[in-house]
Image (cartoon, rainbow, N blue to C red):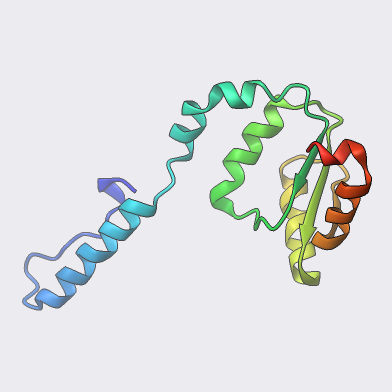
Length: 130
């Protein structure tokens, strides 16, 4: 959340409540803004060490647009044949998650309920370490 994205305060507005509300919003967005590029850059060693990862398990994540840069960065560093497991909740969520994963270029993601993936991780020794 940079100065150029902040909501401008109308100095000519006589209603101080509006300007105070705008200040509150700007402060909130300034505190909660995720600077993905900076965070990725600060953690580049972590991402570079993912070269041997062959399974990724995503549990309870929304795959929202704010986090897509992180998944793109992960995908850049892992093996091409990495298997992606992703939990979903309900059919609408299933469709949204599948679409997001395919847009990331993930071939054949495995989507299942969180419970099923959790059981597989307990019974599959390879997944237990993921």
